Length: 412
Ligand code: SAH
Image 1: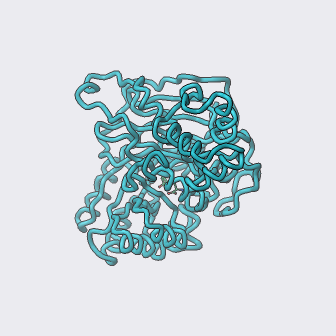
Image 2 (image 1 turned 60 degrees about the vertical axis):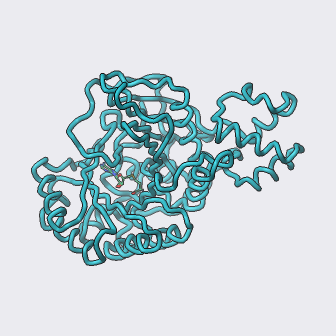
Image 3 (image 1 turned 90 degrees about the vertical axis):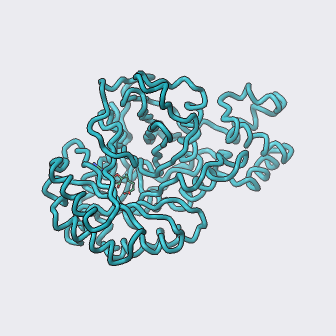
């Protein structure tokens, strides 16, 4: 997992501790099997829909849903207050709903969508990876990362992924299915509850001096899946996360980052949604020859087309764009590639973009590994030399397979 924190070397001091474990579980075989190199998959296999949930619906839709169930419309607001504002965990706490109707409303509109399978902690308890089972057995993961002044939840938007980037564990699993809006939102709500409960501890000395806030401040779509390939659910989830409470979680759109391989039409559409989320473009190479291999979507939309779309996103929203660049030893880490990247970004303008090099997290079976530290420093130096703001990303949770690209849900 990564976040905007400078890399100061390993942050982990102890072995990861597994808590709340249950029996080993295996990922259900993706319905299409592993993708062949370069093969892209945009259409998720049709799966039985997850049960309807309050978080799938906008406020008007919730009122209608409640009325269809034969209850008074104002119950929708009460349910929303419990779910989004009070983060209520158990129906017994919903005392303003008469017992006679509470069970019906809860079972029909607040069904359990995510079943915890496994929780792993690292970084002295500051990083928590959760593996969830969805209603049909698909497994997805989310990662909660606490920093002194912010708390970031990294969410999944699809079970698996169809984009097939060869260095990414999820990409190698193929696409199982799209997640629903509520399945995405639930990951954020679970994290918010965990923080609110106040039972999370960090076991080191600076905890008292600089404890993390008790609310989720950032949501990054950097878990499993290509969220822009599950566009409607991802946008609706963003709306639920940003709508003021009690209709939504009331978070700032500025704290949300949408990461994409570069689905150009979807980037342009996102720019027009009127939600100022940050866009992160997973570029990983500045030249088409290499990017065709590293990010196969490049065969549809080239490096220049992807960068142009990112620039348009900046122009329309005023939000500075991030370029993600996993540094892979002897693959994409040459000085000339840093220069080419800087030149291409500067050709569009100044002040519109910053680059986040990420040390590659090697995934099982991969022949690739992270760049040497000296090579990484030189890459950064060249970009900065060209005036491009550049911050190496911290790789939180790599020892619990919670780091970027390690979310394969092959949990055992
Ligand atoms: N589908 C989205 C989200 C993917 S995960 C996207 O591609 O942007 C978020 C980031 O982690 C992406 O930039 C992705 O390329 C990167 N990533 C994937 N595998 C990685 C690995 N093994 N090491 C480092 N970064 C990786």
